[in-house]
Image (cartoon, rainbow, N blue to C red; front, side, top):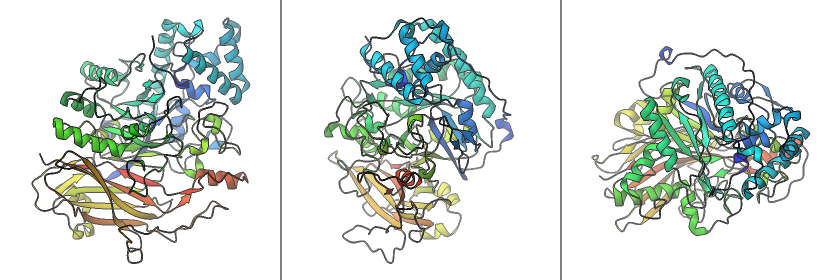
Amino acid sequence: MRKTIATAALLLASTALITGCEKLSQAGGSKAEVKDTAYPEQVYWGDTHLHTSNSVDAFGFGTRLDPEAALRFARGEEVEATTGTKAKLARPLDFLVISDHAEGIGATKALYEAPRMLLTDPIALRWYDLMHEGPEGSLKATGEMLAARASGNTPAFMNDKEAAEKRTLKLWSEHMDTVERYNEPGKFTAFMGFEYTLMQTGNNLHRNVIFRDGKDKVSTITPWDPQDSLWPDDLWAKMEAYEKNTGGKVLAIPHNGNVSNGLMWMLTEPNGGPMSADYARRRAAREPVVEITQIKGDSEAHPFMSPNDEFAGYGVAGWEKFNLLGNIATKQGDLPGSYVREALKRGLLIEQRTGVNPYKFGVIGSTDSHTSLSTPDENNFFGKHTGVEPGPKRATAGFVPGVNSGRMNWESLASGYAAVWATSNTREAIFDAMMRREVYATTGPRMVVRVFGGWDFKEADLQGDFVKAGYARGVPMGGELKPGGTGKPSFLISALKDPEDANLDRVQVVKGWVDAAGKAHEKVFDVVWSDMDKRQPVNGKVPAVGDTVDVATATYQNTIGAPTLATVWTDPEFQPGQRAFYYVRVLQIPTPTWMAYDMVKYKLTLPPEIPLKHQERAYTSAIWYNPG
């Protein structure tokens, strides 16, 4: 008996229909034509988590844009959204991973495009007609599909595995051809990938799977379906077999730990026993990066675990109460296993006991948009799915309009993007940067952030080529600072505002460590901020930067904050015998939320609980110190 409850993403895993569409040709290129720099000189911006009409839930919710439209949009072209609105990025992306759900890939599209006269099953005919009524009908049909799947009372046409496999092979081949055509080394990188939608009764354990390789190797597999799996071990086994059989490379990116009910980053193995060194080593090798922020909330930190961090809890509202499906309430005791900062601390604890850190991962952001449009900008946000694309009712609608999900759409974040420090804009270079964790996340703005850890950095290093100095005498974000230096570790930190966005408020270093008694701790240090001469700390806290947001017009002024912030910071509380990690958090000045832009655009009066301003941010991957 199946032990997982599927979301709408997992409904028609075996619909006995096949679909396809014509693809436009696009010139590709060769990696051999691109020269890598000696060390990463440029940050590349992308989205590793985007769904198109090939995802069962995305199509069921009304999305009609295919992978080609998603790639054209990411490259900077104007497309027409499903609802008819013209959509275009102000700045193109450098790379994209289309991560359609592996389970039931293309199934709802196949049902929609089937000849009606050939549909003999009355349930299939009902869902076909509902989807052809428009977005509201599609939402209703999807809700019924979800109910049928959850109850185990699925109609016969959903159980033809042979037809489903045939459909998957055809669609996957077409998808890979499209991705290859749009991959242009040196200019735009299109990755092969999909989502492994692992879930236990609504507890989110999803992973995005990304390949370093092209169709020649990736075509040896079809997207891996979790089926009856409860834990990621089966996925890791498939990844290991792929690499052994093809010589290729593949990684997995966990996402939305915030709705996992504590299962994403546990202290134990799935059997409940202590985590072994072998298990920890395997997980660290397979999952070098996690997604810390996206539309379904932010997973950095929670006020329950971080009560002294005044900026903890960003994007928590609405997502902390229960799991992804809303069917299991979240207990406070389960919260630590759902947030990244706690996972980093748990990694130190496990390493102290076993010698291996399973949670030595980097962080990125991505959208998880189901519209085919990668749009985390507050003033250009197309929502989670087609049912909440721009319109006057979306802010006060449910997360899935017409479906009692327990969450409101205004609780969605317009977030985020993945920032990668790579030696070129190619699959190989970007993938390798993810493997070495030289990556960071933002909630949308394209802030340029660098951090290096070493033993002898001085303020004078900032006046010269600090990047060259950072690589020569230290380690970048994602690296491990080994003992051997004298004194205390120092960190070269630089943050530049997005040239088309808001000024910066402050830069913070978040430190976590384990003491001799085996207890984990954390502390947030304000290390550099705007107007430091005027904003003197009070009781150890830097005063607020101020607020220029005019909610009546959804505007702000860059008359406060700073365009750049840089410093060399030395840990004043360093203990050479303690394991520790350090990551950087950069905060912007307050700016309007997407709800504020909607309020002005559609002349709305919104309820007081809807936030109209916030402070967007960036999170870097950590630098670890291991006493050995």
